[in-house]
Image (cartoon, rainbow, N blue to C red; front, side, top):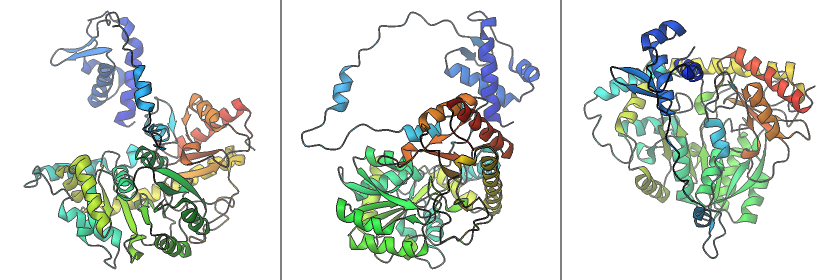
Length: 502
């Protein structure tokens, strides 16, 4: 079992056993716990650290761990009722709500309780992350001369050049000077939103779309305006209408393996997105988060939108995080023209720069012989897990299999593979329409009680959703066995709420 999950399980066992010890009494030594529970010393350290963080035990170097003394009488509660007014009061004429709803993001970032199967996560399972390669890269980076010297605010030049080649493609559409290094994709996306649109402005978004982008837009004071999508990506006929009706000067899209639908923007629509945006005098933020998550059966990937952009319309967002580890928060912004200066200014004001050792570690990783092998490994694993999820759904929850718009023309898949439903050839999730009348929040809660975490669809919509949906991730689960068991548990939850499954 992976150290992080087994550490949580051991912490749960020790937590239940604390009543055996008096306050101040010493717990068994780490050596005893290792032998008794047949775990590693690292697992014991993680478990004790978790209990110490909860205030249940006290660790003393060289002496061991002790049950914490009971806390004294609680102090008088602080009266914070005044904050409700201070945080809600809007200046005269301010139409933009100041509250921020991050529930859609927090739901996928929260660590599930021990024993809960994670079908809602947005990152690779630890077994798929290149932990050894990352550790080796970080160690080598730390030994590089000047690794701990303050880096340029734009980023380490060699890493900027690598991203420029990756984003611009073989045609050399981008130079290193067109790229800024960021602290991951979310930071880059937030900076792009703030750079392009002023507070209170409308911003066109795909519907459905990535909940983290909606949260970032609203936190920046922007007003998301949804534009419907289908299996070929955004409806470009409606995109033109939305620009005219809203007066927006920004459109945010995920042209490749979109979250949550997995759609790929069709070839003819790619050109139309650029044409429509240019005619409206608007920018396009291209969130290319999943380019490194293609499956074994994916055809050659289309180039980035920015590689085909001749007018400086596109601001491109890219990250290494999804294909590696949630802790390798290294990404890039690419743009041309005056907007790049504004992006640089926002980066400096928000975070100064990305730490040089982290940038150097990223360079070491992507420049190593194992990088290509890792990408091939996750391509195969994601394909296997995607197919396992599809098979489990057909076997346990056939009513959940969406008979929607079919395959995207750009990818022309085989309708026999997935029962006529769009099956994305990349990314890490399936997007399912639930049976009519399903209360998705209630079903998500029942699923958690049954031992499986899923993502409700509501946070993916900027306005009222047309139906109830779930997003099911096949990357965060431990393997195909857990995926099958997770769907079986989801069926149990459906039975509890009398949701049709056949």
